[in-house]
Image (cartoon, rainbow, N blue to C red; front, side, top):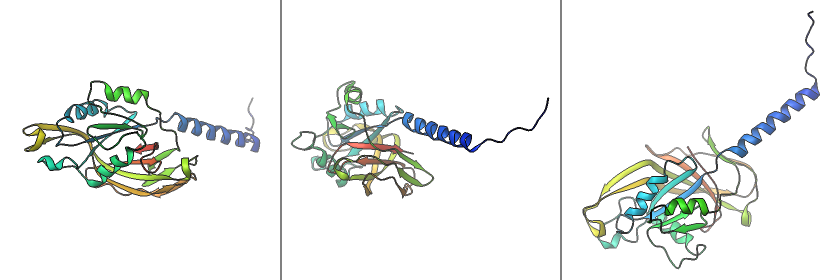
Length: 236
């Protein structure tokens, strides 16, 4: 027997739409949260190579955003760090009070902005990742030339939006002077630029995603000001 098919009613369409929204929300909830691992290091620090090596071990984990920030305060020892920038040093300095430290040191690994360790012992970074608090913040995506941040609660009413330009992979640097004279030091995911794009106050927003410099990848961090916890992170 043949006959005409009934057209879907409004109630059916509404139900289907709700199901699609729920499915999308589930997908967002299942999206992997990145653990941000920041290594503050220096080519002029003889204690740093083991921590550099440990960061290399976790840099390819899909749940980890590993970043090397090279600081400048050991340059006086005779070797000017080729990746060192004062803004990276200041980023580390801002972390120290909230982490209970009296001042910056190298190597120092900071995970999600709320836990730290020296990071030089075997397995130390992996242990810090597994024991630290996960980022709890808004949805964050980098798509179509836009930074999209979802709505959510923001501690203190405002969070900073940071743009990070870094070179993926490992680069080896020969050191000619200072404490590491004659050594070639590997570095993972070296940060080349760091800039504050603005603030997130809890409402859903979209911002233009600045183009990355040639050869660099981009990461965006939503973070409580003055060295507070990282609420969300995304990379392209």
